[in-house]
Length: 284
Image 1 (cartoon, rainbow, N blue to C red):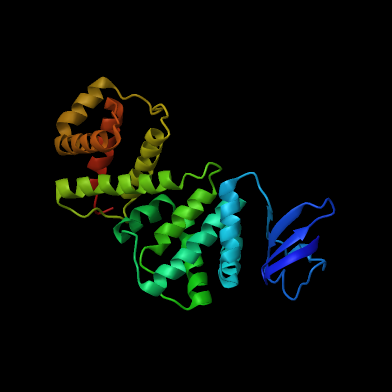
Image 2: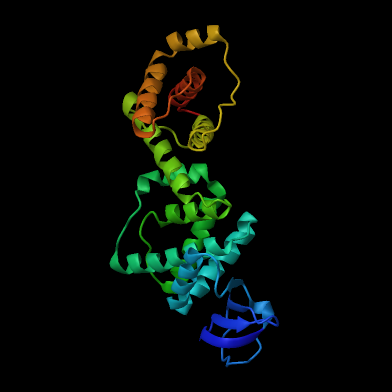
């Protein structure tokens, strides 16, 4: 590949032997390069066809080339770390989104703008523990490279991005919505019982896991696959766990009003069982 144009130390426009033009990204790949110079292919971390068939991709690449080279370098460093820790491969689209997000993060940090509700942090940490740990590593890299104090809640945003990078369909909006719904369900429970749930308990972890798949099934319009409960047991639970059953009723109303979801009887009763456990086993 030979250089057509060097944008900065980390991005150059090149053409291959078939005369196809590419924009290639890599640490130091464009350093001291002139037109017709050959590039070191081992330094290529990302490559984009100069004229793709996607207007959105073209817009993203153009935006990338306008960024400070330090932002591009940082995006590549974070991508390498996350790909290794999560054993995934960032698609170019996800890489462009991450680079754009980092650019926005730097801008917000310099202006002291906070955009994330930090109260959702714990649910996100429980829902996506591996991605959350990767986000903490990314924050260390950002802090090191730019010597800035990041706004509270940035770990949540980055966690969403890393979850999204693992989805071929790029369901970032769905991931954020799921976290918000779970957070609000937990708030309904805590308000009803006037307690703070023990976030370190085994039953809390089980409940969060149940809520995650429960919400995802509805977001993806999937059929409920949980095993039906015995009708006699259901009636016993309704009587014995009356407060939990009433709380499920509030949750059902909330989900119907906000999402238009109609919960099945079995869904309500599995929720009832989890709510009883998480509110009556606080010592665990």
